[in-house]
Length: 54
Image 1 (cartoon, rainbow, N blue to C red):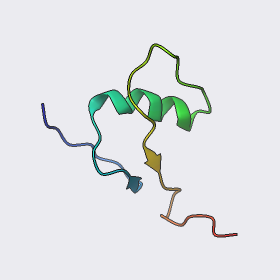
Image 2 (cartoon, one colour):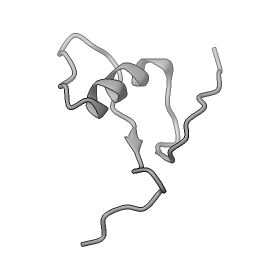
Image 3 (cartoon, one colour):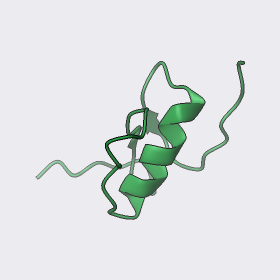
């Protein structure tokens, strides 16, 4: 079912589904995704949308 994800940060993904939210939240907290969990971690830009270029 299509839906909308409201986020205050930019996302580096074109095609996401609800199964990607769990791995993304875990990744933001530095927790590895369990092997049994489907979905991929969505690339989330840092606050302000500036990426490290160094």
